Image (cartoon, rainbow over all chains, first blue to last red; front, top):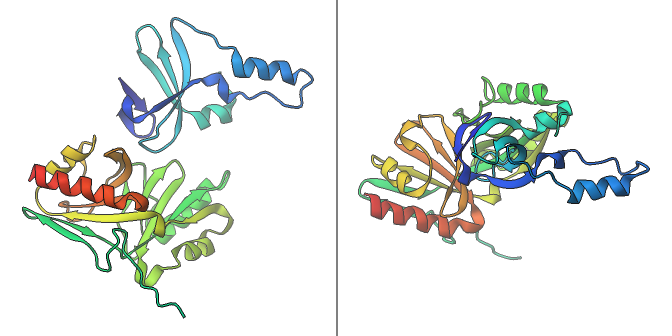
Length: 94
Length: 188
């Protein structure tokens, strides 16, 4: 599987480490009234789609950037790769 | 008073030099290193300082700027490594801090790395055994981070192009040296 790194171009997936659902970028506000409930969801509940999934990959054997990879869990086709910091800064994290 | 002698990364008092069929691997102890990470919101200013230092522009992704006395390569978005001769720039991190001020976080890196220079015709065959990189397509000035025997390294292609500089973690210097020399013996 090849991941098309937005800066470095196509790289073998063996250079990357998979973390999980990209919703992890959206950490809840710890001061919210229902913070406990939000953190329960943040930590434990995940969608498990058969289809497009946005997930975090870490380029450990490259430039050590975090990426948000949109991958089809059925075909493994990767349709979009973004720098996680860009996703986080624009607020479109999940 | 203690009478302490500095040791090279491989433990010797002299730089280790290995030659196999015209390719020479030299442990290079003459390099001072410091990393530059732009602080949030200061990316443009940091890049300008680095460009000024290198009398050009900051290295683009996957590239080095081979300049004297300071040279630099790209490590990650808004992060670069700067190298210079140890003899004149032992305090490189302090020098850079004075230049970059609050635009960047500077970290002393000299003692974290072992530097090997591999020179000679046939280095491509050696690297093809060592690392999953397209060494044939790397030109002078290209830099890549990759893995040799599970150890993260930077590979820089220098001028002339039959010269590679390999930076690995100093704590694994012996293992990296073993990997490179074994590959040289196998490939050449």
